[in-house]
Structures are given as structure tokens and as C-alpha cells.
Image (tube, rainbow, N blue to C red):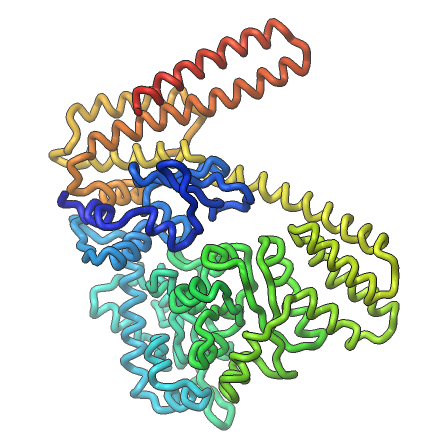
Length: 572
């Protein structure tokens, strides 16, 4: 096997890799677990050690060890490959001829930019003084690769140009801004914090304006306190957490994640010893952020001031977390202080605050009566803040416990509290159902993913002077015939599918065998979808009492079932 991909797969067992993320149980010759890609209480996620594949019978996700890491880490193919290569001790070599893939070019530009900012930082004493003044050690600055963007119009642009990076790539990486007079650097006169994906690749920057002691900006390039990279092909704010790559192992080992807001909160938290912290970097917390965290732990700790403003600020984060069946605790901070202030003043106090964090509803039940003395005001606040959280709890026992506690605090019977909880719960279930329907509509099915993979392999091989497949025209014809008998499928996604096929199979001696497997699997998926659709029609005909139609549909279902049985029997 000459392929790097096959080398990685030969060194890693999907059971070991998945076991780092999931609690696996033996199930005959396979392993099972609750699916990490959708909420469920009964395991429907199975791993086959013999085939080195996984499949969830609940959400229909499936694939090999690479696609598993792509899904669970939220990475693209190259990111997953890098993570697995590091684990397997394999050096990634690029065997692709011609121009580099655009995403690789963007990642390369961002890495060069990070090194540039790191290298120039010591040349600007004001920037170094700012960082040391905030309490950062030299080791911490290096660990988080903090740098400085000079207050010049084209410092990074000129640097990258000399390195052979095109203006087009710089712009797509969010590093420059075009104007009628040309382009200029997006970040100028700022302390730079690189944002990475979960594998440690730089995907964006957050730049803080540097101020002199007199309060004037060092240079007049911009007035905003923070400037962040725009959304790019590799950076999506809703799916990026600052410090996630540094925190992920500790999050897993401690089975909890501390969520803070800003870069300094995060960095000083790690420096103080709370290394399972991540930051939303001033961006509102999203369900995608929580999905990233949930792959490592269901326990989250939030930090805020113990006043109405702090409660209001944390409300959405708590609501989102509880809706995803996560356990939420609150680390209380001294009034007017943020995690960075506490961690800098007394690191042990920050460690203690996190360690002694209280379950959110318990804390609110304790806190609200002290903030709202009037009974009517307290009732309104409890209804507004606590009841929605109780409605989001998945456990009926937990709900019952907190309904009783609320009734005690308000001095009323439990019945009206239950009525309010049920009303909120019904509203939440209606909203969640609508979101699930939308998710199913927007997510590509397994059939679509298989078809796109086949298209990528065929287009890659068809573009070579000497391909590795005999009679490739026959495979194209077989694929076209399957497409004719399937629901409409969009398989043309540009060069990305070609690159992925090449990256996965280049140098493999099993290209033709894998293409045959893909075509057989696609045929199986088409038959499964047809069978499901016909069964639904049959049920409807039976409900309507249409006996002739029901008999006709039953015959069709039996025919499809027989075809499926023959196909799967031949595969095994």
C-alpha cells in the first residue's frame, strides 16, 4: 500500500479512535453506543471492527475512520486527515500535481501570517508591555501564539506577496481589504490572537487595538476595540471556539468545559490552571458551539456576575445548553469582575470558583429571592427565568424536584407551577420538532453522499491520461443507470469532490474494488428508499380501505424486499 490514507488506516483501529469520544459497548462482533451526531437514549450507533466502518441507524450517518473524525470534530477532509496522521505517526505528503487546493492555500497563508505576527511582536515594546501588564507570561504568549500586526497599510500584504501568496488568496483568507486604490491590511496596530480549528490549524484572527497609557490609539488605523476575521471558506463564527484545540484533551479528561467570553478570559484561565476553558470570542453562543463541546462532555460551567445583568447575559447560553441535554453549572464571580480579572488577581480564587460552581437552577432559586424582595416581582422573575429551564430538563424526576422547590420559594401549591412548566414544555417541543424537520431537509442523505463520492472518483479517473480502472465507461454507464432509478441527486459540487477522491484513494490498489462497493451500496440505498416509500403508500392505502391498491403495493414491497435480500446476500 503506497497511499498515505491507507497507511493511516492500517495503523489506526476505528474502535480505538471512536472510543476516545464515545463509551462503547460490545455487541456481538461489533460495538455500539449512543450516536454522537443526534440525541438518543437507546444506542443505534454501531461500529464494525472487521470492516472498519460505522453506521447509525437513527440518523443514517456512516463511513470510515476519516469521515467519523470529520463529523465528530467538525473538520474538513484535510483537517481530519492531519489529526489522524499525527495520531498514527504518519507524515502527510502531498502528491497532487499542479496548483494547490484553494483551502490549502488559505490555510498556508494564515499560518504564514501567524508566524509573521509572532516574529514582529518583540519589536514592539508597547505591545509586549500591554500583554505583560494584563498578567500574561512569556510562556503563555508563546503557547497561544499571540502576535502583533504593525500599524502599517501593507505589512502583511507585502510579506505574503514575497512568499508567493496571491492577493486573491489573501482576500479569501480575510487578511486584506480591497479598495479603489488597491488593497490594504485588515489588521493594523493590533495585538493578534489566532483562532484555530480543533486540530490546531489557524482559521482566523481576533485583533485587539493597542492603546497607550494616555488612552490614545497607537496609530490611527481603526477605532473598534476588537476586529475579527470575516466569515471565510475555513472560518465560520458559529462553529469556532477560541482555545478549543488547547482545551479539548482536558475537557475530555475532566468531563467538563468552562465557557468564558473573551480571549483574555480564556488565556488567563489556562494560565491559572483551568485548562478546560474555551471562549466564544465575543460572538453569541450557538448550538453548533455546544455540539462541538458535547462531543467531549455534557457538563458545562458558565461564569458571570451574581446580579440581574449577569443572569440576563447568561440566560441564552443556559437555555441552549439545557435544550441539548447538557448539565449547566454556574461559577459565581465577585461583582464587576470577569474571569480574567479573577484569574490574574488570584489564580486560586478562579480555580475555586470553577470547582465550586453550582447547578444553574439551584443557584437561581437561591439568588433570585435575595435580588427581588417583593413577592409579585419574585413570581414574575421566577416565571421568566427559572420555569423555562425546568421545562427543558429531560428527566421527569428532576422536573418534579424543581417544581416542588419553586412552589416552596413562592409559597404556593405545585399545581400552578406544573401548569406553567407544561405550557413551556409544549411550546419547546413544537419548536424543536420544526427544527428537526428543517434539519432533515437541509442535510444531505447517505444516498447523496455516496453518489457524490462515486462522481468524484469517476471524474478524477476520467481526468487522468492513464487511469486505474478498466473500462471506466462501463462504470459511468452503471452510475448513470442508478441515477435514473433514484430520487433527484445533485452530485456536481466542483473540484472539491475530485480532490477528496484523489486524496482518499491515490496510490491505492483497490480503487476499482472500492468503486464497485460504492455502486453496490448506492443501489442498496436506492432500494431501501423505494421500500420505505412503498411501505408508507401501503399503510395509507390500508387506512383508506383501498384493498386493490393495497394488494398491488404489497406485491411491489415484496419484490423490492426480495431484490434487497439478494443484493445484501451477494455482498456478504
